[in-house]
Figure (cartoon, rainbow, N blue to C red):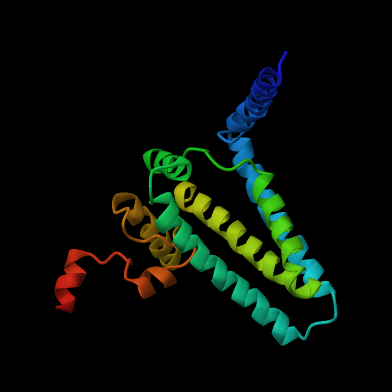
Amino acid sequence: MNERGRTDTDAASRRSLFAAIAAPVARLSTTRANGRAGLVADSGVSLCMLGAGLWRDDLRVAFALATIAGGLLLFSLVEYCVHRFVFHGAPGLMEAGHRKHHEDPQGYDALPFFLPPLGMLGLALLLTEFMPTSVALLLAGSLAAGYAAYGLGHTAIHFVRFRLSPLKRWSAAHHIHHYHPDRNFGVTTPLWDILLGTRYVSKGAQNAQQ
């Protein structure tokens, strides 16, 4: 077999191996068990990183709390931007997956449960190259906590009927997004929708403001 033939064979083998791995992972991603495992894994890795960062005594309490608050605020902006510009952006894998959620809000399509925690751990490792380990753990941990809160909150919105008025209003804002997909991109908080002008305002409220 010549060199080109071996190259083609190797490429075909790699594609076959990728397909063999991707198929069961794709099936896993559509199961209820994967969704539940994801919520547990996301919450667990965030608590572990935050705990590890707080356990170290080389930071002042005020600075540690400020780092966590900053990470949560940063996550809320990332959540908004990804939802608006990626999930509702140009056609592609992410946009198509999110479109399926709009078509079936109670479906179980989600990332494989092990990918986000691995990504957060990788982010923490990367951040240690630029800042003290304790700060890196707290920052990555707060981002992971924001992601866990997003997952838990988004699941609750679609599966729980709230009774308390504040939770009803918070839940309603996301349900409105499913009818007005160019509004209310924030799930965990309306902050960036308010600041960036994408908060849904009913026609009655608009007329009242004029």
